[in-house]
Image: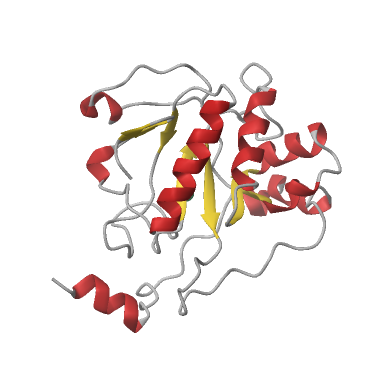
Length: 222
Ligand SMILES: [Zn+2]
């Protein structure tokens, strides 16, 4: 993904994570063009994948296969920033500290519109947001079918995570199981406020899962 284009700026360029499957690039271009046409400001694109994909040295168990991207949920007008300035950009959380809901001083209906625009793009499997954001969408957009593919998760309180379905022609790609039937605006959301959910278990000890052979070959090729 180029660092700049109509409707976007990629940020934290030193991470070298603004790479993805061609379908991800075209989907993000489509997204930012549509957002721009609807009057949204420049959007900040965060982590996508490394040049050859694969596990990252820090952060993210996903983002390995080039079909995931983080998009910042920020509606402020932005100047064109230097590469150095893009290293330190910050966006405040949209969620209250106790995660019981969104911060009414920061949340805007346009955040919901931006999430909806993303999840309804062709080829998008789902969008992950903080459970408090999902709860707010359930309240403000009750009964709307697009909510099903907006999934609650930890973090993601100032960015959304967009994941594509497997691109056509990628025989070894396996889609995630589809989200459960319904819009997800039910008691399952309450689980996120339990002590169990708020203290996620540490990663299991032992080596990380081994890569599929085809991935290992790509990563070790020169
Ligand atoms: Zn992400």
